[in-house]
Image 1 (cartoon, rainbow, N blue to C red):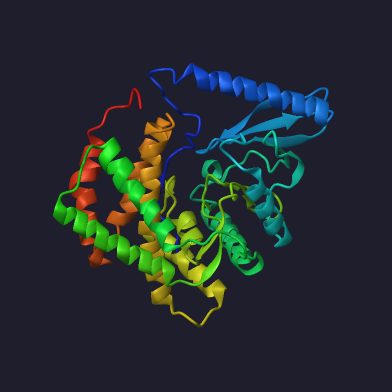
Image 2: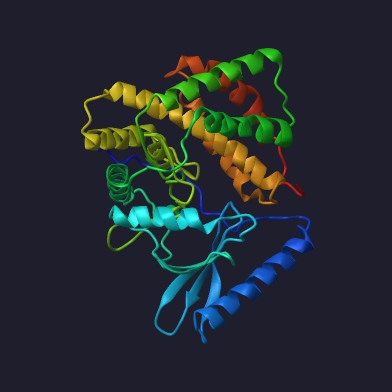
Length: 362
């Protein structure tokens, strides 16, 4: 493993750092109050809890909300997944698969699919993103890499949606539609459109030629918990698919919320590759898969961060876009075929982002 350098780039968890200059929509507040009333009725009448404390545990980028339920002697997590927007069944299916494979994930203790509530075991409060440091990074990432290897070996992707060509392209379109056009008002000229189209084809081909495995799809520092046993605890896995072998590795090591030095990243990639013990593809081919898979993911993520603001009123993710796109810039000399995209990001996107003021309304 690489030596520990002096500096790394880390930004704090800003899940609740949502500055809104106009109070977004009284109707949403009314809806949330109604959901909380329904949740209390479920806990009291259906599950029999008469005395408890309920606090917000986390709010993710979807319509799901998580609450910590504390009784006299125990702590649980309540998932609120409004049925009109979310389906609890994929979460329950994937949780069962992961538990069966020996991974550390929340256990579903009770459910009401009609109301959209799950009672889960509590994996604690120690988020990877909050705990990572220069001193513990090698140990924590070592555990996460071991868990990822186990996930790919022991968890079947049978019956899961495929990460197919259409889905890959739909995700990359988020970069164009939500970041370039909606957020920055940067339409592409014909030459730029042609260059972006060619790179999208390259990235689709790269993803589709890789071996297919179980893919968590959001395996990163905001979905991993530091656990005393069977570290890490794994969250937010309900969107799992059958897809490219490098996707989750990219999510973990080229994380949108914390950035590590390149020699650390590729040292961990080597460690993972050795753990695969697979002679059907070489190290250099695997690294190429990893790099280009990262470009696809970071285009997707930067578009989602812009959409979270303009569609959902969540500006807290906008500050993660420059870090996310920096991974693409880092490949400028290594993968010259990415030149048109790198120039677009360097010359137009990053300057436009740097010139923004804090948003005051979607």
